[in-house]
Length: 440
Length: 126
Image (cartoon, rainbow over all chains, first blue to last red; front, side, top):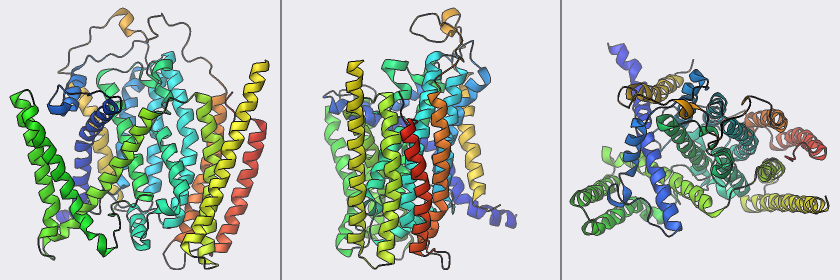
């Protein structure tokens, strides 16, 4: 018995994390959808979901119940077994990628020494779910969507991988925990040392998650719903869950590698310690807004729900503030690292996702040849040059003793010059083709 | 087998079981499908589907797949190099100038290949 406990002890914390992720991630994905709908509505001067719960707060739960109870249709000509398995592959793989990512110093399933490589490798498996789903549906739209998706993922995978190599050059380790530790030691997030690399990763990650403006695999105006055309009800919901989980995963990779992970802004500076109170303050502001809106709700039960949300936020504020208010050394004070780390990590992931959504509502959809052009003729060469540039900056710093600022400044300017040249060459080619097209 | 992978294995089982169990469980709750006829046909905006779905498709997709293999394998080769370039473990770090020179040769060959592909038009979609 005793040996069993000894054996289970190091597994217990990761196990709790695993259960929490599996249980909470679908809910989080649902609320990201709600947030997206609300943001979209706001940017288009509408209200968005308002009916189910106060301000539509219970909409994701209503949607989930509806999708679970919907009729389950499998087309008669579909390859039934593969049709059944494909969405499961998508979801499982998307969730599995979360395993090596650290949400705050306390919350991680496994600190692998190949952390980031594991996340990338597992994440790339998601394409099997999409291609198998499109193939097994036996529908033209599905197959076209799946093929497009495969070509797109494969094209941007390379650029994203190269951008990550740029970040790894600075970190010198693949473990997510040590990457963040390195950023803490240097006192600077890697986005400031490799801004071009971050830009490449941001663009490539939007394309990898099939999001607008690169959502060609599911372009409604062309392919109905792409690889998901024949899917309905809960199976469709699984694909949706996989897409939103993938968004969280790529946002977490970007946060870990470029945005300093769970570090507070100015983590090493004493003068900025007042930022520690920001989490609680933010929660209190949200809670205040909830209470302000309570009397304006039309129905009693909606008032009650909104008040409950407000109380929950106050509780959260209390939990986040507690480690700062008790004297140092106690268990509660030690919890600061875990709680505040998780807060800052999730805040950064949230901001990254917000930019995703913002781009979606701003840009029109790309054409497929434009998408391939951007991937292969702009991002891939630029990412190679970016790796060379960061390597050069590190050599200038280590071998010839240049300061950080001149070394990285010089190589960033050089990389940007290459980017400008690539963009200019692409424009020129496009113009030439347009002229040839007119003559023909 | 390093012990860190045991929780990942458990997590994988959980992550796979959650959607599968949900699908199977709710089959008993949701209405049994009574779909017949056109409802079970592939959706093509109301038109009856013509021809075989698993027919031929553009050769472009194959070319992209081949290009991907080349470039992604190169990327994977860069991962250990990038880690050894800056690793903080004693005795493993490469000399910066040597590491950079070797990588420039490696990427130089890649860039020559890239330019050749570009000239050949393999990177164009149309």
